[in-house]
Image (cartoon, rainbow, N blue to C red; front, side):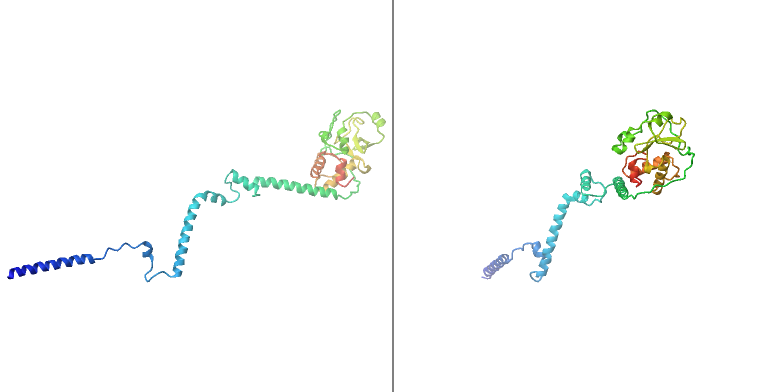
Length: 298
C-alpha cells in the first residue's frame, strides 16, 4: 500500500511544480523598448520648465540659421570677396569700369593729368581776370644806349619777300598787318617818296604806316635790325621806346629777366611769347596791339 501512495504523491508534486513554472513564465513582464533621444534628454523630475524650453528653442533656431549661412556662403563666397576688395586694386574689367562710373578715385597717372588740366584752367581763369582788370600804364621815357648790344640781340638777315611764319593762322583785323607783311628792299629815294615819316633807331631807319613801325630795308644797306616785322606804334613813341616800355611791363610781371635796352632780341621775344600764351593770345612773339592792350598799355 505504501508504494502506490508514494508514487501518487510524487506525481502530484511533479504536476504542482510544472504548473508553478508555467505560471512564472506567464507573469514575466515584456522587455522594455529603448528610450527615444528626446525622452532621454528630458531632465529627471518631470517636464522642463518654461525658461529651459525657450533656451532649447533659441539654440535650435541658432543652429538652423548657422546651417543656412554656411550653405549660402558656399554660393556667395566669390561675390563677397570681390565686394571686400580694397579700393584701387582691380578685381576685373567689369568691376573696374563700375568703380570708374561711380566716381572711385582714379589711378596716379590720371590724377596727375587731371591736376595739370585743373591747374591750366585755373591759371587761364586768373589770367583772364587779370587781363580784364589791367589798369592803364603810362608810357615812360628810357635813356637807352645809342649802340646796340649785338651779342644779346644778333642782327637778322634780309630775305626778299619773307613773310612772318605762322601769321596765316592769326585771325582778326588786328593781326592783318602781320599776315600781309613781307620784306622789301628799296633805296632812300623810294622810301622817302612813299613814306613821309621815317625815324632812326640805333642808326637804322623805320617807316610808319597804319599804326605800326616797319624796318626800311635798303635805306642804309648795312643797317642793323634785331627783328624783321611790324612793331605797334604805342602812344606815338619810336620803336626803341615802345620796346623798352614792353620790357619794363613784362619785367614787373616776372616774364622778362633781362635789361631794358629797347632791343627786341631773343630774350624779349621769348618773354612776349610766354605772356601771350598765358593770356590766351596768338603767340606772335612780336609787339602787337592785342598784347599791349592786355598789358594795359594801349
